[in-house]
Amino acid sequence: MLSGCASIFEGTTQQISVRTTPAGARCTFWRNGGLIADIPSTPGAVTIEKTKVDLFIVCDKPGYASATYVNRSGLAVATYANVLTLGLAWAVDSSRGADNKYEGQIDLSLSPNPMAVPIVQGPPPLPPEPVAPATPPRTRGAAPPPPPPAVAIPATAPASPQIECTSSDGSHVRMTGTACPAGWARAR
Image 1 (cartoon, helix red, strand yellow):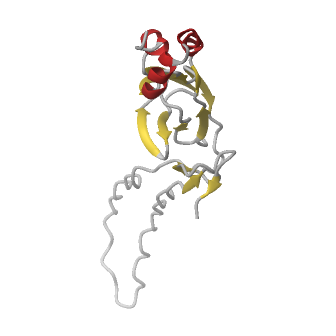
Image 2: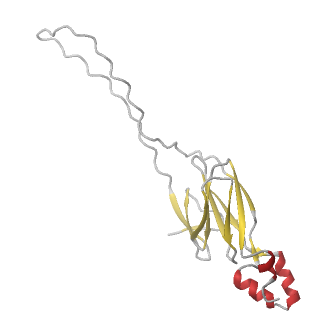
Image 3: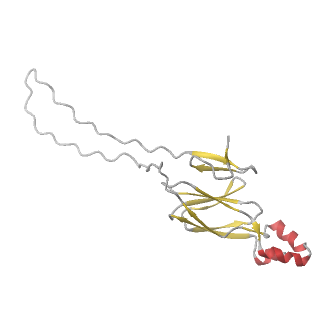
């Protein structure tokens, strides 16, 4: 009876799956400003420890604006069975985090970023040098031949801006973009 209903039926860890539109985004999981899990390419799933603290899921993909989702910690269904034990099992579950539960399936849509600049791997290869036709010998007083035309090399793309955001509970997260998600303020 003292092992806790939620600990027995639901455990102290939970799997969270993330799908994004478009697929192939990297999603990071943050709690109290610290990185706790990472999905390198969506769709994917991670197993996390359950706690009373909300999770922040940040998904990034080149050419798209970052998407952030707050996965709120709520009560697990088995927690209600703890009432039958006069709260003894609840104390055990609460100390292990088993009385909490997050949303298990997250679906996020990423918006195309009109400010995105494609990442350039390097300048394109130069065209082959043209073979100059044989020139007749110069006579005294003749103008020298014109120089070959210059080849323009494109500049590399600027790095995406990074900002640090903070919440009212003191959590911090670093994000790609120019604005913090709703409920967050830009750190000073």
